[in-house]
Structures are given as C-alpha cells and as structure tokens.
Length: 427
Image (tube, rainbow, N blue to C red; front, side, top):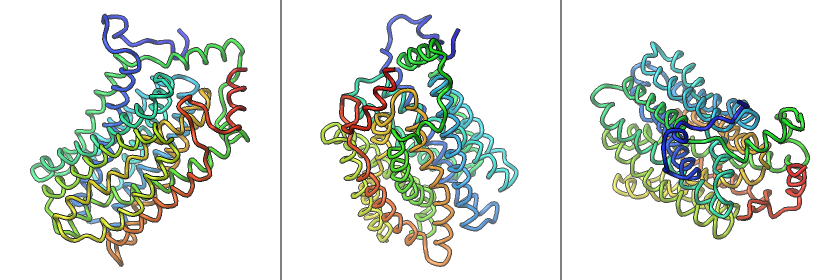
C-alpha cells in the first residue's frame, strides 16, 4: 500500500456516518483543542512552578520559550513530512508527541527537566496547525473553507478555557503536577483521527501522479522560490508579530492577575475562562467577515482591534472592569482561524502544508522569546507594562498584511503570481 493510501477503520466497519469534510472538521477541532489545552497548562501553572523551584520570572518565561522553539523547528520538519508522506499520519504523530511529553512534565524532578520536556512537546505541537489547514483546504469547498477553518481553530479558545477550568479545580487541591497529566487526553484525538479521519483524497491523487512521473520529494527550498518568496516572507513576518504579541499576553495574563491584580487561583481561572469565551466568538465573527470582505481585510481589522485593546486591558486595575474587558480584548485574538484558510490558499497542494505551516509555526518559533522578554521587562517595571507593549506588535502584524495579496473564495489568489503555481500544479 502506498504512503497515504490507508483509510480509517470506520470506513471499513461502520455504515453511514459523517461525510469526509465533517470528519475532518471534527478531528481538527479535537486536535487543536488539545493543542491549546497543553499550551495553557503551563501558563496556568507558572505561579506555582515559580514558587516550588524558586526561579525568577525570566527563568519561568524560558519554559514558554522552549515550547515555542520546538514549535518553530517542528513546522518545517512536519510540514515537509505531511506534504510528502500524508496529512493523516503527520497529524497523528504530532498529537501523540505533544500529549505524551506534556503528561511527562507531571513527573519531572526539576526545572531543567521541565525545560527539556516542554521543548520536545513543542516538536509535536508545531506539526499540527499546518496539517489541519491543508486538510480543511483540500476537503472543504473553497467558498466554505474560511468559515470552516475559523470554526476549527476556534477550538483553541475551548482548549484554553478547559485548561482554566481544570486548573481552577486541580491546582488548589493537588498542585501543578497532576494538571500536566491531563495532557495525555490528547491521545483521544489520535484515536479519533485513526478511526475516522481519512487521508486527503486530493493529496493522494497528487502523490500518485508524482510517483508515476518519478518526481522527487518536494524540497523545503520550494517555498522560497520566486513564485512564493513574497508570500513566505511577509506571511511569516505577519504571523511572527501577531504571535509575539499573543504569547506575550497569554503566557503572563494568569500571573499578571495573581501577582499584580491580587486574585487567588480560583478567581484567576474564572477570568481566563471569560477571556476564552470572547476569543471563541471572535473566531466565528472574523471567519464570517473573511468570507464577506476577504481574509486579508479581516486580518487587518483583527490586528487593529487587538492593538487598541491590549494596552487598555493592561492599564485596568478594577476587577469588575477586568472581568468584562477580558472577553472584549480576546475577541480580537481569533486571527489564527483566518490565517488557516488564508495561508492554505497562498500555496498549491504540493507545498501547502509546508508553506502554510512555515508561515504560522515559524512565526510561533520567532515569538519564542516573547514570554522570556516580557518576564525580563516585568522585573524592573511590571507585567502590565510588558503586556501593554504587545499592542504595538499586533499593529506591526497588520502592517505586514499590506504586502500580501487578497485571496478569493475560488481558492485562487487575486494576484497574477498565483498563475505560476497553478501552471506548475497542472503540469
């Protein structure tokens, strides 16, 4: 059986059921939800980890940095793997790595072992986003892909909210170590993907034609060829600035609420849940806007809103105002859903997972030092100052989008450069 030709057991043993596009939607939602949950477990646990290990704020920030460095490296490796050997297999491998190594942190004996385990978990986390984006693009009609991607990636807010609820119950009673053991729940997404998510039919056909023509595997350098260089450079820059801001805010908001706004763990968890309610609705609204006015315009509006709201939130001291401003700020954090559909349309199938994953997850890698830098700024100033500065980074993400083309619901770019990719794919 050729690579990628496998089909899920539910196709063999079940009659009826969801169509392929809905299985992909469900599998992608579950996967990205656990991706977010595993990320957020660290942010929720940082106040207790700092206390147990006696580390500085900058040392704690390095734990987030290690995760994001692993993500940045993984995006290239797993994106290449998915384009050459199959979306489904790459997805299962990525989920299994981040689930198992996140759970292992609950057994870590000290700070440096946690640091290493977070890096390895990041290697799995980085392989997920680009693969899901490619699967959605290849299984959903072009005029529905923006909304589908926005819905799937809105599971990030569900995962974050679930982590906050878990933390509110587990941390006060049992400490931070049992919380990380919950990361093994990601294996449920592996099981669902194995049982019900088929390989992309479009990818299988393209792979078969490449094997018939004895075409070699696609090199990583392809996304830097003249046809795609502008997309890769400015797409990566935009996601980098957005993710620098996002991880600067989200890595430290729980600690900010506890240390600088005087909340206990239970109240902090409730505030974080409210943040993610706002983020979930933001994903849906901006996904709808992307369909109506175009993904590029929707992203620019998203970044303008985030650039304004983040400094305002950081300046608030009243708990009740913080409670209601949180969801409003996080409403503008739904950009990754639009990026999922947008980046997938920038690249043709043979480099789709690599190209879209590179833009987004290398952006994550570049943002790796954001938690560390913000922790460094917080030492002489405050977390409120560091968080407020993240608004400027969101503004720069919007500026980078001005150098990229608009896409259409037909799946092609409204830009002559894309014709080169179309001709190459047809040939």
